[in-house]
Image (cartoon, rainbow, N blue to C red; front, top):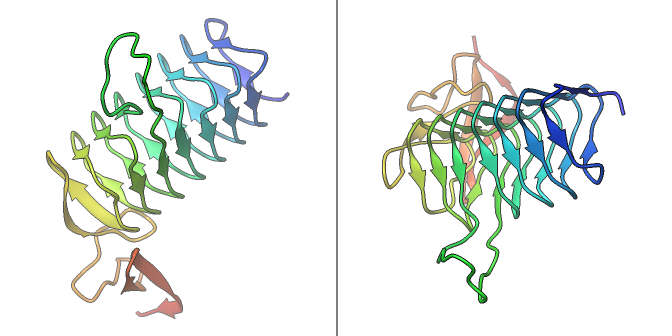
Length: 189
C-alpha cells in the first residue's frame, strides 16, 4: 500500500487504506475500516471498526468516526466534530443497537458539530460550526444552531446561493424533494 502513516499512528492490519492517503500523529484506525485514496486523516483521530470513508476525504484533528458511519467522496469534517451511533447510550448495554449515518459526497461538517445517529447529510450540504444535526439534511442545505436549522443553500463550492439559487460561479440549481440539484450546463455571466 502506498500511503503515508506517521510513526505514532496505529493502523490495524485488517484496515484498507487507499493510495495517497496521509495518516498523521496519534491516529487510531481499527480493523475493517476502509479508507479511500488521497484522504487526509489529521492528528488525534479515532476511526472505529467497519467505518467506510471515500476518496479525497479530509478529517481534521480530534474527530472520532464510530462504527456505522459512512463518509462519501470529498467530505470535509472539521476539528472535534462528533458522530453518534447510539440513541440510548448506557455503559455495557446488552440491548445496544447500532444506528448508521451517512454523509454524502462533497458535504462539509463544521468544527465541533454533532451528527446524531440515523441521520443522512445530503451531498454538498454545509453544517455550520457547533451545529447539532438531529434530522436528515437536504442536498446543498446550509444548517446552523442547536438543534440545527436551515438558513440557506450552498453551491458545490460551499458558497451561499442567492434567491434565484445561483452561486458566485454562475451555476444555477433547482429545488427537488431531496434538496437542490445542479441545472446541467447552465452558467450565466
